[in-house]
View 1 (cartoon, rainbow, N blue to C red):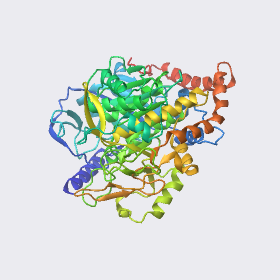
View 2: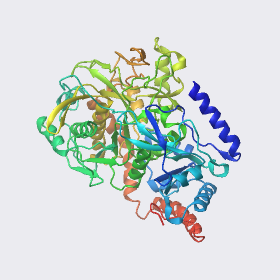
View 3: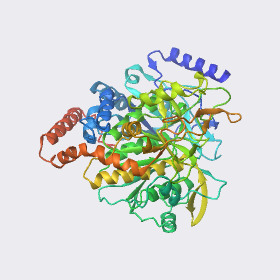
View 4: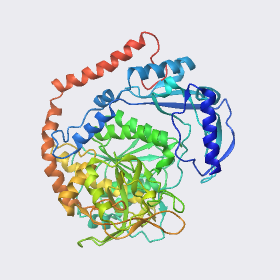
Length: 601
């Protein structure tokens, strides 16, 4: 409490002293687990990223719903990335303000325009220049988790400030407040690795289904120093008679290693979605938050990215902060509207997210984003039995976002749970009006994996996400085989499907996820239909494939139109939109103040 009071006083003093400057981004909680070492060397290099506010976010949100909701005339009519960048470009006033500010303070060759619509800019500079620009001080911090990672951040308990004329156009500047989240999302299991591809394929009614389309693939997004070994994937495929797949590393020089997270992710998405080409995208950098933004940008810029990604990383929503969450959510919306399916593990700290006593729950992000499919954890169950009989994994993440409101596609499902579950946590501990998650679940305990040629057992919702990801990649494959649109953003389809056919997902009605420490306090109980511990339950492939083909029929016309796009009116419309952005850039080039896209001058 004393630290929070000091933090508030320091912030107020900064505002009074600076007058016309504004604080644009402040964390909701002071990060734990980092020890201050010393003031950062002023000559140390730093790359500052500036996130500009996007325009037409409401239009982007509605477009996402239109192209993602079965029965909507636009269902499956995913938009091009060029259209989306044009739609969400910051205002010309915002771009001019940021550009003038940066050119006033830095040399031309230090400035990078990161995105085609100019909503992300970067500057390569040194700490002393960053401190002058942001009216702050940077300090070095050592991680208490691994005892070796050192990062430079704005001094804890203080703010950074920029001129009001600039601040009103920015979501945030990074790196400033957000620290790397280094806690492992997968843990060694005490069991004997009883869950394997054969068991999962039987449990989820997959049978021998495998990929057949030449126009489909599946992806794993890896971060930090998490590397996999292809020979371990091959060992898994051979042991369980899994048809092998082509594997592509992005970048091609991605290191090889035997790290549990990467080994787990690659072995299980490729085993569930057997024979479907797999891409493993590794984004370099200890700063996970910056790496997430970079990954999303890279996917949007790619012409060959897979239409589905499983991601097993995240952290407490409050440590990301609302400004960052808003920006990344915009990028996740763009990915969904462009036709990408993004699945995130729901987290391994229960509903509480590491809270103490009767504190408010701290949901996991990006799983709590409305624009991803969050996959929770379950355990147990018997293949062929009705119901399957899975129970909630007590450590599985789930609950309600403190930032994003409840979404239209889940309104009925969440309202039903809150109205009928009689043992809810105290209302002060969760945001009942927030986006509820997870959306679905899958097995998450005691998975067998190969590590450097030997088997180990691991647990976590990091097991659940690639398992579900591989199943939905198989469903995407059915769409591709029948010249239908890819599934894209999954949640409207999931909630609509579960409402019309209760057997599409294996409903989990036993168990609960944990709340706050100490002890094992309850978070949210499982309940019939949807609940914030297991979502709608685990996928039943045999039922889902029929629904995927039925809803896919209306998307065929959109796919046919795309084949005709070369000389048609739609192409002209897209090109005209892009030309407007290019002309605006050309106009500013004439005054010598426009950096090239993606590179410094």
